[in-house]
Image (cartoon, rainbow, N blue to C red; front, side, top):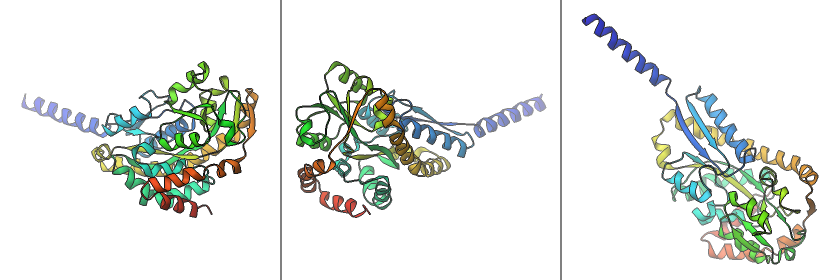
Length: 325
């Protein structure tokens, strides 16, 4: 009898050890991008690499299309530890004002410039600013260069935006920028934009080409104007409290993979830009180039306001401008 009990105990211990060895860490990753968007492509690639590096012991479940809430919802859920990862972009300027510098028109020249900015200023400026507000940046990915679509007229110069009801993301500087051009901007959750455009609540919106494509805005928008007015990073973030709860090996794999993904995310954004212009034209959109010099000249006031109203704002502008190359 004693022998049978010992055997049973040994078997139970063995099963417990085996279960522990095979235990899987499941982490939830939310974003507002549609299926097939650059957010979704990057998120799924991140999940794939994490799973491979961990030998299948870390599973990242990606939830696209605002399934876990809009940007504001997910930011709160991430801080509370209800989701593990979130991929914000423009909304970061509402977390802490330093991120508003990326809303300065044409401050980022190209993707190489963006990479230099993150390499030089990521650890010294943006990570500390975010972490002070309970947001831990794991990597600097990409949202990309934004273009304007609308149903009123082609946008060639800033004055063409006069009176246009334009959806923007949440973030005061994007709103102020378009107000300075004469538009009527309104922040709105991305998941609500298609319906707002279809019903005429909004005349237009501004987004990278991949969002225009993946959200099928071509079905409800006539004009696509290549303004390229801002380049906005995306940030894979978590809560510092959530991060501390993960075992050291999980922390290492997550941290390393998030940084490793940075060039992949920028390259994916570039490839989408190269590929989609012709496809959007085939869908019936009227495409025009904007007079970027006119937009730059019309943007001096927003630079001045940011430089004087945000602590250290002028220094941020100067640092980023000095890295243009």
